[in-house]
Image 1: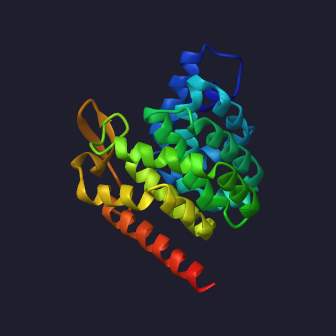
Image 2 (image 1 turned 180 degrees about the vertical axis):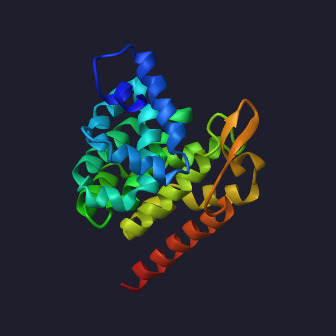
Length: 242
């Protein structure tokens, strides 16, 4: 029913669509089974159907969050469905929206960029690379500025620093020469500040008020930062030898 309310059936009041989207986001957090079930729902093309919603300001957060969850847990299914074209379009939309986004909306958009890179980097590398290059210095400035202003993580968007570091990792893997822009933009210094300011807030991905209710999974932020720094360092050394 939530999927019907979100992308199918007769037009609904925006608040109902957002509520349906939030329900689907909650169902797909850390759930590969639910992500697959949504993708396989007859009569819907979720990735295609959500593209227009990503352009609607009120729907950006739930749309980006849902797409991020699906990309994280159903990458192989998305590749099999040939979702690359739609995801590359959504990558472009997310890039355009990032510059003006703040708070949890920004967190969701950055997380979406990283997950799309992970899903289709081998299918649409030129498209992703072009988008990253086109928005290069502006994107890095936004990411570094956001890291520097979030030294004390906020429970409303506890994953902000994590998703930025994940995007750095995805970007360097896809475009090693992007390391020059990262270094010139102050990313190494921003990463070092994360290492000096660990937070218990970042052990959780979902909060109810000020209480963490869903633990973060995967590598710790400390490990991710170390990975990002090593990738940048290795890319710099490779460039120096060439």
